[in-house]
Image (cartoon, rainbow, N blue to C red; front, top):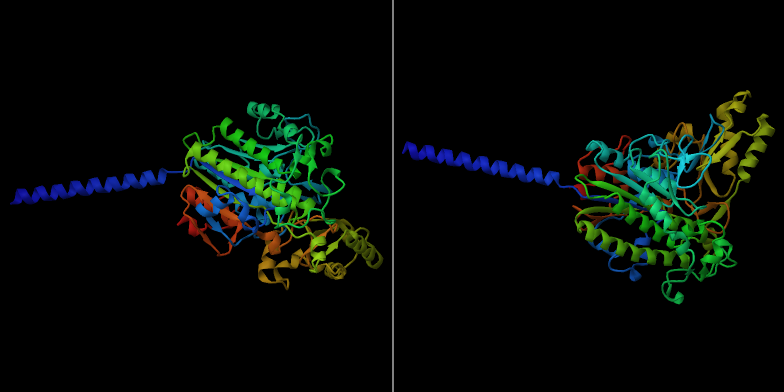
Length: 548
């Protein structure tokens, strides 16, 4: 009896041991599973509603597939103002805001240098891919790590991270400090270029890509609508005086003979759907040449599509040109997903798509429809300088303006005996006289300003003490700087800050949430899914509907 009891104890212990180790092995295997490739897409100037506005004409395999198979964060907003390209691309991949990551705009005024600084300028690096003089580009002005940097740090630099875009800032900031290569388009040569920040010579695969002369091919054709033009019911008529002209064409109307309009450079390509096409081309070339997703560790490819921004600024969001661009891009996403499916399997890659900002309606369109709008010009700064000179004898008190901020000329202010608080109040009072200005607030008082809390927080998050200005200007809704034609972005309002965010592929379950989510939550979500550290300046939170 004792022998039988001992045998049962031993058998039970052995079974428990085997089950425990089997369970641990399964958990270990599960933890080891990672996507082969992360594909992060930013569509420059894509309003959230473009996911749905043309949906009755989208293919089944493009935007519809994202919504059908992926997880949609319907109420995603930008956490800061100004809502501009450099800040947006940086926020997506850092989980941070300008006050922390330092990219305070596409440009900002540097008081120490006494000049405007471009967000990605590098006074040491040289451009690769074209003969070039002057500053090149790199992420040296970025003060934090990116999710790509953290991915490489997590496995001792055995992951690869590559960024491609028409715009330098759309390739550089998403791919980060430790990027294996960031590539952007040079308007003059038609080449994709990089800089000596990354390597000493342009990789051979990029040289071979440039040798195909694809810009010449794409600009040698006529851009006509994909479908009969009278079927574009989601757009205004083809000829509106608040649409700017592409390439100097007399009217903003189809068809566009691109060979005639391009001139001596290739920058026109960004304002046509074929700018998206060549971006897809170089994305595929990067995957193949760099063997992305082919190694032991997860790789990352960041793609930014600049055409919707270049074209949107020109014609506004209601033009047939915009509708046609999204219908074409939808088909190209369908083909791109088929390529990724075949290469990695439908669950072998993690894909997400978002935008760096939205866009306003054109003031001309709003005026035509009887909606509140207007334009704001540089005369406000001129008037402030004139009146401050008369009252306080301070010359050029506004030294510069950028990102809806006014920069005071502190040298001239300190050389006077003016009371600083009185000067601030006088300037703000002058600014508020303009009908298009809702308020003007000294940045030092922003935390206590009489603004709705969400608005105040966006301005606080967008303020970098070393790179931002001294007074914030808050526009009225639907007002625009400059002209009545075209469209722009940069404000806190929903048309600029409400962006798409859709996840698809590896470990993503189909669904959606209408809970408010911040742009800063994208990188922490990636970090949680990959079980790596968040970027060093991240203030966002994992999207639990995805990570759980």
